[in-house]
Amino acid sequence: MGLKWADVDFEYLCITVRETKGKKDRTQPITSELAIDLRRLQSSTLKDGGPFSGMGSRHRVFKEWQRIVELAEIPHATFHDLRRTFCTNLARIGINQRVVQQLAGHASEATTAKFYQHVVDETKRAAIKRLVSGA
Image 1 (cartoon, rainbow, N blue to C red):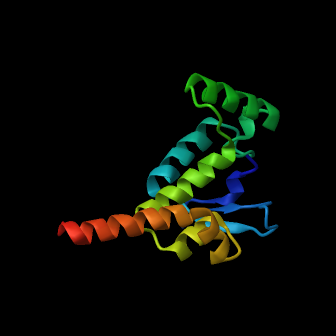
Image 2: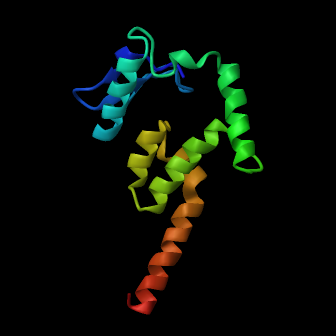
Image 3: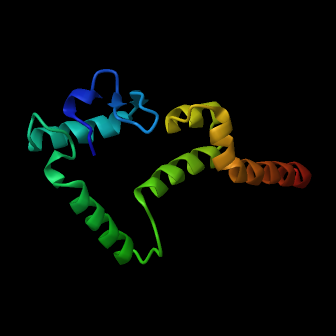
């Protein structure tokens, strides 16, 4: 929510995430498609804020999130679940654990492994099944 336009580098296709849980700024890559969408959003909003500056308070955004979760008939979902889903999907498609760690901003691979070991186990089972079936 605190992303500012100054933290979006359109030339190098990355954003700087500030005020992280680990108290360290982190640079994350973005796709060219997202950069195009952000440019479009920037041109239609205040130049001095950020992509989320027009959304109001965090409380308002949280209430809207709850409304969306209820409409989707999801029993329970948090913003953090989006992060978990992102990392789980990366692990599920076979992205190297070190890359998942860096994208998640975890200080160590052990933290990443602890949270995503179930995906690694599923991937191992699928690999053995594929080997046995000859596919």
